[in-house]
Image (cartoon, rainbow, N blue to C red; front, side, top):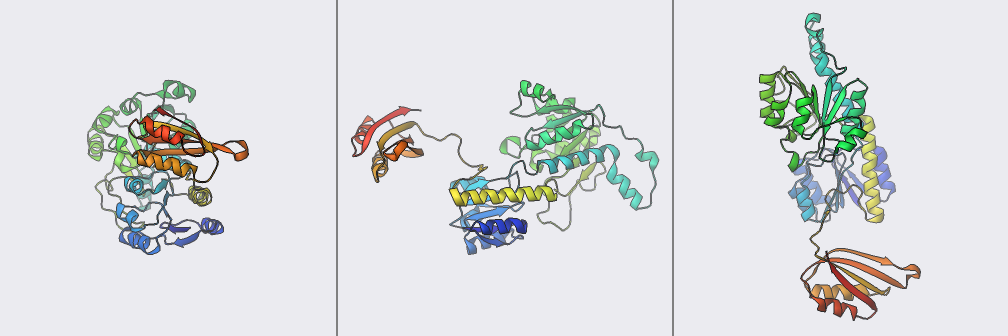
Length: 400
């Protein structure tokens, strides 16, 4: 199995993949057209990326591509729809960078409260202004709002509790009962979090449902002078609404992610937020600790090794949770060569489309039972013909 690494992973992981029998092509600076050309030239079965974007053109360039691994949690940089249409698995490495992002979130929180970046910049320029910087409000007893309670959101809660902050949270999956178990306040909407909080931090995945989740209504609900932190993705924030809150409500902001981020690791930054005195920008470094990168790389290697050995994809994000199947056909049959081929032939003649299939073997491997979910019109004659096939013991069908 050929694996193309389009972003940097550790030598230990490369050695691990090679030990598993993989041919590894290590090309950590591939982006844009160079990635497309490399995929076409090498035709790998597996592509591993971190921040590199993977487009429909990239996916189509490698006819043998079977699996894309995002060495991180978010996978919005991958055209998942194009991968699904091409029958390419997409997997991620969730939770492995949670502590790193939570640590940065706390760092941004403290920076906002104590104006740490401005303190340092003035000191480096020979400016002493204790009168200005000695007026922090402090964090103890204030309310920290969390929007999104995945792995990162939960790690953030652990850390802000150590600062003696109260926590209010919203997540689509959070119930009042679970909030009580977590000893946090329940909010019915993101706007409810904004309304109650002195600090709001976003930790929800970037999806079509969360596009501009931090909207005008969200920022209108925020308190005067509150803090806003985003370490997830820039698409989750309506930046025009955020700027309005900064200018009109004195909201202060710390962002590790924002719109139109530079694609490369070095270069120039030309963004209207970069020079704003109420905004702290960092370089999309939430997951960039040695600990997190080691854990992510190990998980990426585990996914690839599992797929190579067993054909299974841990953490797959693009398998359908509900297929269009209309019926389940159950076929008890002798465990002999060709039985299922004859069953599938009858299904094909009936113009039924197989959506899911499982074949379980009875003890001693003399008989088996196939469960086949199909999408098709009712036709009792098909079941009768299957039941009459050689080596078929019985066939039944139920509507789903």
